[in-house]
Image (tube, rainbow, N blue to C red; front, side):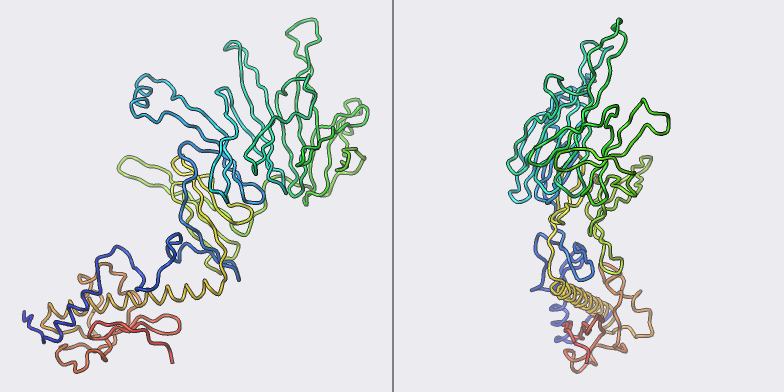
Length: 477
């Protein structure tokens, strides 16, 4: 083949090839880039006239973190952390000896504003479970810790201890509204209002045995209290003959009820509904509410969806959870990947951050609301940058093809996209490219800088590549 092209054209080829540096993905043109903490348009969410930028992950806690939960105001997050053996030799020794790894467990509170996590409670080795419930409208949480102890392997005893956490000061203390002489309850149940700064606390106690035989179990009683975020509390005393058992909240969280039972009444009429005064805890007989709060949280503007995929490598198959952030608007850019191979995704109620656990480590991704007009402008600039880049890459491919084919460009009737495949790093670079030059020897082009090879159209214009390899944005007339 004759590779002797006009000198001017060779200079153009060199200049054009210099425009295209090895890369694994499309990059924007110079003078335009996203902030370092927001990489690409795919990390944005749109809901109607609102837009949100999702930042890069921040490591909050190493393995093994669990039970992360956001405070109602989105400023704090409580989580558990087990700090185990960090020495490789120690892990290998425990594995060979078939012994459990020693681990110290802690309850931590993380401040979103300070970016710091603080230990607030060391969890003993006999702790089996914890229950964490935030009190709405406050930075405080009720935390029930369940322990199992035994004098011997045949007799295990469960007790529960209740704490109240002040996340703002990263402090925790015992909270026992019941008579301390009763000791720790066997179990504790927490029922916070969905909207108000109130919560019911229920403790179940086993009374001392009174029967002639120690094998006869003692009576089990339940103590129910109504409390506020200021730690004020009053007992819920049912009328004579009744025992208050189950508290419920109205759907809006402004009214509270209890179901009380009277075993002396005929079957079918033993249960009665009572409305609870949020001032003094007194009960007033009432009818069954038409509807009430069933627990859980209502879906917010941004939610987390878990999608499970299956990956196979040889004989090994593994399920992988992908977490996606979604908005409620299907007509907008309403989805972005939060994390791959992750679980326990959650969004703070104030939409300031999203958290997840991956490989045992706890991460958060900051969420920043930006003006929709700014997002639209950046989106347009991003798409224009991609169009310019693709047009430039296509131009380089055409010039390289001509160098290998006696300085001749393919004809438009040819399968030029297939012909140029070997000259592109990615076949998709030619997607959307319109080849407008009829083809033929490049030496016949009198004005390379003014002769179009083709373009990539987008929105209000198109990215045009010329025979000399330069690219220009041409707005629509």
